[in-house]
Image (cartoon, rainbow over all chains, first blue to last red; front, side, top):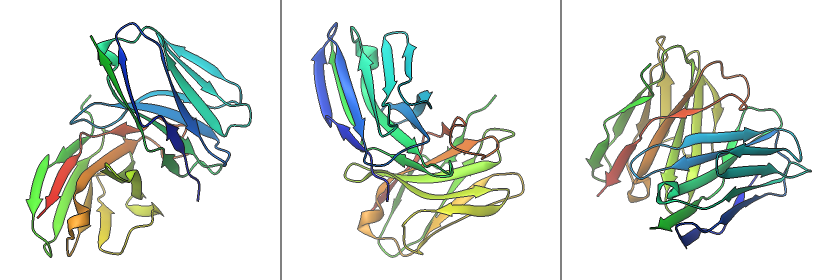
Length: 111
Length: 115
């Protein structure tokens, strides 16, 4: 069974600060997706990383896929209250037919 | 283009009852997956349907079942409800279902409370 561990589980920061969320596994994934979920809504895909060592930027968000494709990180620069939400990582199996979600990191950005 | 639509949004049932949840995928999407989300266990995969056939199944008891219709709409059923079945049930659709590098679109979910 492939497992994804996210850390920290909860993060509370002030507006303007930086934060990093980690997603780790002992398994190799063919790709890694990051989602953000707001209360009362379903997760929304932010990015998919596919290649080991890949770095993708989405405005103030930077996503990195580990060289061995077992871990990933999400870094937010100068966080804003609109970044508040539950961040989920999800790894796709080598066969590409199954998605495993991490437990999520709840981020609260206070104004 | 309408998103993934789930009905109902909220449901309250009592132990022992059964429940049916509905999901309409994005037009043109043929793959529909169902997930259970709870504070303790996070998002857990229930099953995936593609072209009316169940293609993948998670580790849930047989009380959880689903089906997909020819128009790609899907339903999931939970029989003999238990308190632990209280959760947000999320449906997600994708276009071709060929690998998870393809973008997955989630609905807003059905919040089920079992009393």
